Image 1 (tube, rainbow, N blue to C red):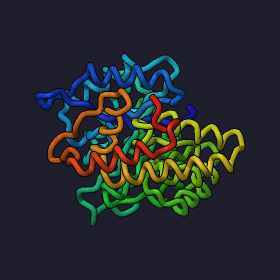
Image 2 (cartoon, helix red, strand yellow):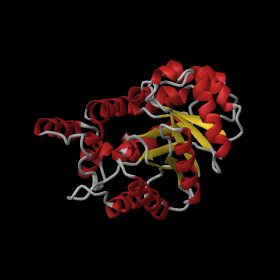
Image 3 (cartoon, helix red, strand yellow):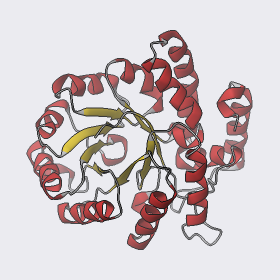
Image 4 (spheres, rainbow, N blue to C red):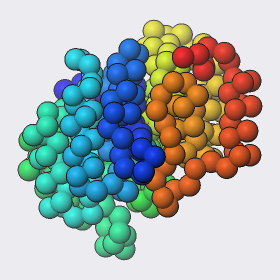
Length: 298
């Protein structure tokens, strides 16, 4: 299975009463279907997966699967703290027709999670999974990063097909690419480092920014694929500024605010995450107004 291109790390919209709004999620996916996004990740970090109940997670997986256009590749975030729970979630995603599972590192018992422990965990999940497994390293949230040696060892498993590295560390990404076999697929989770990562061999990106500016994220990927590196570098500069403000500084609330401005159903995040305050919204709107017009055109 090939994972190449830009994937939106889908947000989770909520109704006024705080419940997950599946109609709004369906609306967003239908709009994304009109773009050239390669596919979607349901229940990733941008989707606030750790704040959802089991029933809510199931409803989201079903809704995204039903709403996604034919040809869009679907990944489900299935990582949990225990190996058994991760396997259970992964099997459920497989039952619902997802193409692959995106499995983050467990992190609560950090002192115990030495390389051999993490490798054993991922191998056991991959052994039991009916669908391919993609590793997920997001050290800014978990405090644990998969290094090149660990990824190389895991890449030998026939059911582990790639990694989403959200570290934003291009050197680390390059080390991973250099350590794995050619069929192993490396995707990045940071729009701020998308161009340099693609230039050294990454296959694409799974991006929060693609929820708000999918066309521009896809355009950068296509420019690199077609060899237009000067234009790609110019666009990377725009996306880096956008990512810094919307994603790094303002988080999920920032991404959702821009989605609202562009006709998607963003809304506010779930507590304990807070919505943007007035000054943050003002900064964001001023930034969007000064951004290249095509970058925010719906």
